[in-house]
View 1 (cartoon, rainbow, N blue to C red):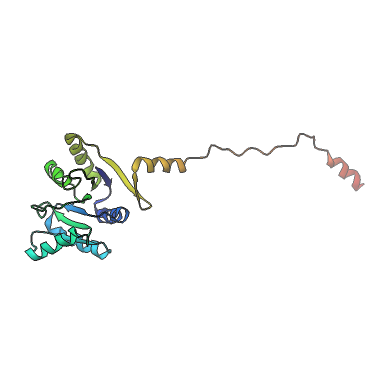
View 2 (cartoon, rainbow, N blue to C red):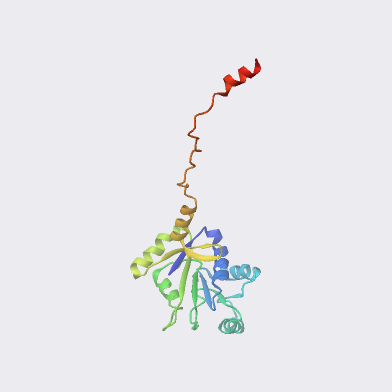
Length: 200
């Protein structure tokens, strides 16, 4: 279980960066409000992602087509709300992105359970605002699992602690101090008197 902290307005940007970095086989992006599914899907499509959304207003044929595209990997990202995902049984989901943090702990468990089924691996990444950190950590404490903060640096997903450490190291003042220039041990000749004698 991983998380990335950003301003709420930057969540879509972070999701795009995650998709570019990971390029998952099958990922589901969860949001809390069904009426925002189409908005998010449209924005992601605009940026060239292979994505579609699924919500309750879909007629049966639309829903079936979207699910077929997802299962056959013609699209690799499905945008959904918890309500829209009810009754869906999708195999081999590799990643869950919580664009909105679930409002209760049971929903977090339910979302997470859609990946890493059986002996297969899976990853849950929550994209959260600073105000949501405490809530996520409360979930992790109650459910007894670790959450690791990540960041995206130069297109790669890295530990925040490592990035901060490297930043401090690269910006630390140098210990090497410039050595004073070595002075000649030989005494200087007094040329001033000589010059005066020459002028006479």
